[in-house]
Image (cartoon, rainbow, N blue to C red; front, top):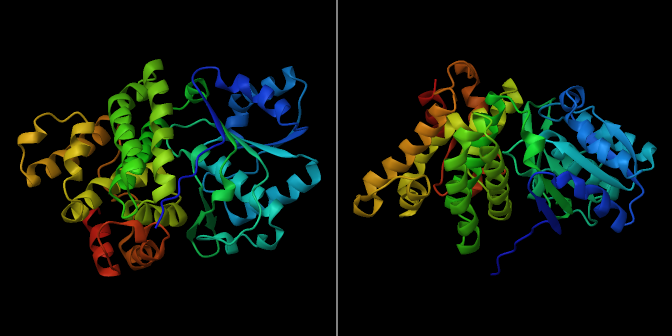
Amino acid sequence: MSNRFVLNEMSYHGAGAIQDIAPEAKERGFTKAFVCSDPDLVKFGVTKRVLDVLDEADLSYELYSDIKPNPTIENVQTGVEAFKKSGADYIIAIGGGSSMDTAKAVGIIIRNPDFGDVRSLEGVAPTKNKSVPIFAVPTTAGTAAEVTINYVITDAEKNRKMVCVDPKDIPVVAFVDPEMMSTMPKGLTAATGMDALTHAIEGYITVGAWELSDMFHLKAIEIISRSLRGAVDNKPEGREDMALGQYVAGMGFSNVGLGLVHSMAHPLGALYDTPHGVANAIILPTVMEYNAEATGDKYKYIAQAMGVEGTETMSQEEYRKAAIDAVKQLSEDVGIPKDLKEIVKEEDIPFLSQSALDDACCPGNPKETNVKEIEELYRSLI
């Protein structure tokens, strides 16, 4: 059996990377952009930085900003109709996972109209055609949606998130510019950064992991661990390193999957609108403890990548604890809550647990699980 690896056709990294949008669009013969960006980014002038690049190059565009933090089926369907009316021939997604997930779903449906109900895209949908070409400009250092084949859409009627996996949706070009992330407040920087760390750790221990993905994930753990604190303090080198670290994590997990942390976090976003990175960060150490017995010696290398010294002389129990403690310490240092007491209601735990078990990320977990054990994990955090 072969291992598939899907990445962007092209990516630009570093301060000023958005300046490469115009020449890329012209070289590819694009005539009008459908710009997807959320209302806050528009309000605070972040989106305008890219629009200025387009204006200076005399490139036409239409702005679409009817996007929620956890984009819904309705957001996508409204976006599809807006794209059809726009006359655009490519998409520029500016923002975090919400903008990019919306753009991916819109781009896929435009080229595969038989999936217009959106729900049919859940899981690995049998789409036939590549998405409308997408240029992705991340404004958060966390989701890595600019380099992944995944997107998540909320089914508001059923209070659940749908994980969609489709190699045809990957953005053709990513523009990873840390200057686009400099306006992120501390809380969002911390949450998205811990999301990136969760991607790297879950991707490293998932059942689909192999040597190529391990290389990306260990390097991502190293970069994120050394730079997140600085990024939260808005230090330029911290921002730049986090922009790279989260992208490297995305290169890995997009191709091998995730696990139970994401499965448990997704229902919290759907039911309570909990920020995805916060949910992941709170759940990660607990699920790491739960999974430890199924991870061989991998926690040793996680601990090493996070800067723990002396792992070579540690017992298996010691280096597993060291890795988990390093994650807890980083989470605490950047201000993440320690538990779900302010989020989860006891009466919702059965629904949350079944949703987690049914989530598309769950089969990637290194340890087999069931509803009862997931319920116990949720309860341990409240």
